[in-house]
Length: 510
Image 1 (tube, one colour):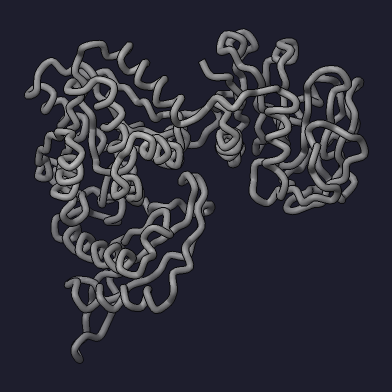
Image 2 (spheres, rainbow, N blue to C red):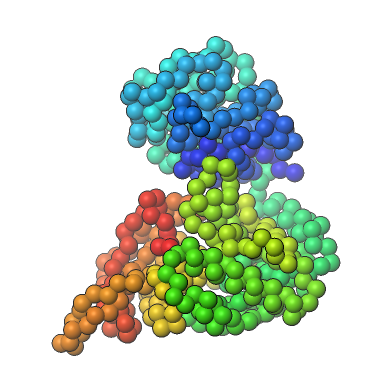
């Protein structure tokens, strides 16, 4: 049993970043709904609590609340932004609506020494994002930080391990934010660094064996990082009782089926390949709305797997490579999450499914899965692959999905990825791909007027897919890719480059 930090989520866009920062310190944490009761928290065995920020004002009628009895548990609590304000309110401090709104980088000063800010420089830059603020601290609290605007930026209880900061230590703009988080975890809450890839593998293998016993598990294998690493983990845990099934849904990249087969054969793991491309494309015919496409793909995936399961016989479990960001973006991590987009392995499951689902990676971020893969000797070619969406090229073929449009996208994507390999850029990029737009533009080719498709190319840097920045690929490479695509892919006469970060955009276009 790992030591646990519970992050109570008030709906901040940065909540998942708090989890990432805590995990980086090799401490296990989970994001839960803010109204979790003290009894539930105690039953979970939490060793510390973080109260996240949030978009609400504590003065709003339906503003998220907490169980005040969490302050009777005797465990360290760190309130961030909204979390600070709700802590101050619970202890009868005075919080006022913000007349002076602080947003962006600010310097902070520390009028009193505190273990929370040990090693943090006076005047250090932090990231503010709030309207309401604490005007008067509660009894038995000290002010331990003030902003350059002279507002209260940090408070601490005089005898209990309760701390609050008005800024966001989890974001990169807070220069020494990781030091603050580390101080809370180790100097205040006395955590051990017991959350490692090796310990995760040991725990998962034990849990899989206890859950599955001698029954068979069907694994939805896409050939991507997550499901491939999961195939290795399941093979280690239950051997031949794991049936990695690779469904060709017709939405794959060029030569995907053959490549995946070769990689697994080289690792002596048997995979089972089935072609359902006709069924998928038939169901998607005429569908343009992104969420409908995802839901259809999720449903047909499950129907396909259930059919395969009947063929293999005596299958009881369906394993999926669902990650924590999938859960978060599908609105499932806490009561205040907003659904950004449904993931086929989260939102597409029917209510009554014949197979029980197991998702060993559902609390991991992508880089953590890669770390697990490295320890399990998963081939570098698999671990280093760029993320590929579960719904495949359907979410990169904007508008209606058809065999003709998919073949255009596959050919263009192959040119882009091969060029990145040839120029040494593939491994410098988190994710790169092409998107076929439902837009035609006028062009000139061979002295003739053309009216064909626009294709976008996209490349981003990221750690875990939760935030991302577009990659500054050299213009010469972009020009080369554009020239090759327009000259060799029939149906495309214009190429554009996506220079949007996440947020405000998502990485995928749908």
